[in-house]
Image 1 (cartoon, helix red, strand yellow):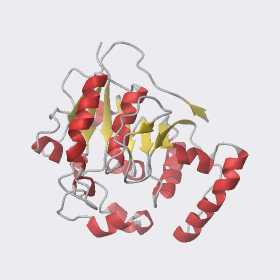
Image 2 (spheres, helix red, strand yellow):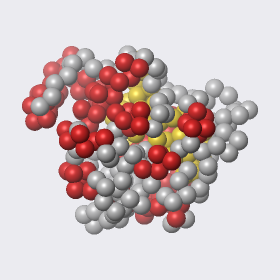
Image 3 (cartoon, rainbow, N blue to C red):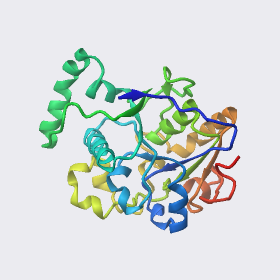
Image 4 (cartoon, helix red, strand yellow):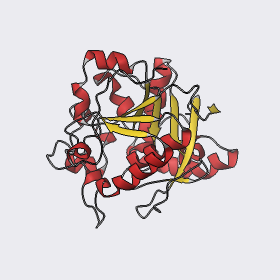
Length: 277
């Protein structure tokens, strides 16, 4: 396994495409899918488990959560990448390094956690499940995370109401590109592109998904929860830090909550300017 940090190879404009889980991904055209196959794409959370429904295999896979079903999602994602035999760079919360790698002491100390997880969820996987290429980052796993934008991998990545905020911070730290486009980040609904397929996989449900799958309400990230407003309340802070870093941020769904509320400008998947000298 190697740990790498990506930096731009040239001064050419580089766009990073974030692949979320929103239902709008189902509207990608064949031309857009073919275009994305040659771009930097970062898939979030359960995307890899159902990637064939969209047909865009990512160059990067991001997982920041450690609560159920994160370990299972992680292990199955690693297995999918190995079977596909395609290079995918994993972007993982540092806890995964301790759960699956690190020193011998790390593995011994963390094995009871994994064993208890396997017992509760009734599944078992290899103790040596490590991706070939990975970068690990730090994040606060509590709701009351500090409102600080991380500058290096030694810093905590910014976290507010969902791992999207963590990924957006990480992209600027790794300097993956100077433009970011969000795909499948709808937020105006809890619907996801794999909502029919996941009905056959109740082992992949968390409590939120059980209660909200297919509902008309906004995504939990956009709802007020335990007195905390949705991520849209902190979007100006995210935009401010993107502007400071010189990174443009767009959303490719014109009906996304972020676009409709005027928080994030819309841009098409293909506008003719991405990734060209």
